[in-house]
Length: 245
Image 1 (cartoon, rainbow, N blue to C red):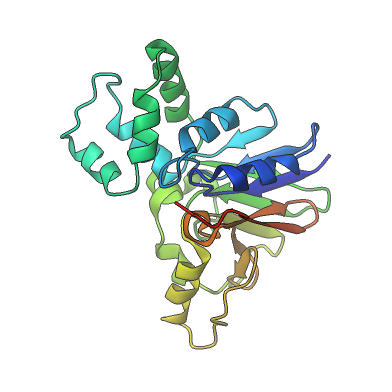
Image 2 (image 1 turned 180 degrees about the vertical axis):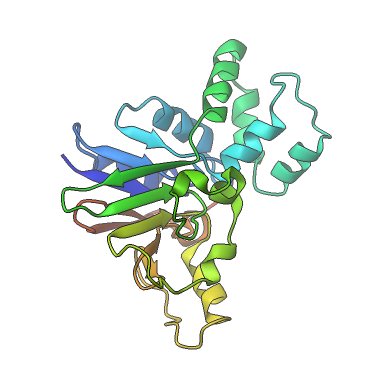
């Protein structure tokens, strides 16, 4: 049995299938949000993740936008502010897939389940390494991740520029997605002149190794990474079909 995490698959079916083929029947996998939008298959991927007993699904900002926009589904308001925000973030494939569903009650129930998704999870491996898992990431909070504001766990990026771990617990790691690694490196480089600007293949370890970003920007790079929380092993997957949406 192994415990894994990945994030921000954004509707890329080929990458998703590669990742899930690596997950054993008795494994656990934390998905850190943003299954939907941008790519063509996000709604189907979301449904598969929501119904897979091996998956612990953490809400991402794209799931949050969808739920805000479709709160009154199926009688949602296409002119609402929430829908406008979602429209600006690649929602068309997701909205079209939802609108094509024939079972309205099943769709409404699924959206209700997505609204109830947690904003974070914690995991401790056999070696005593503690992981805080959320979509956007956060800074260390003395009283626990449960005291980090809900909105920050899903949306905030301000913590990225804090690249020092100070006297925080050495066995704690904060794992997140939300910010594609290329963008994260650019942001760090604007604050710290000693940051390596070459983007690595796979996850990006920063803040003295205690923050790990697993958002490879699947929708524009054609890559994603699966991180083993027991061994820190990484498996990198690349699309063979480079016609990325």
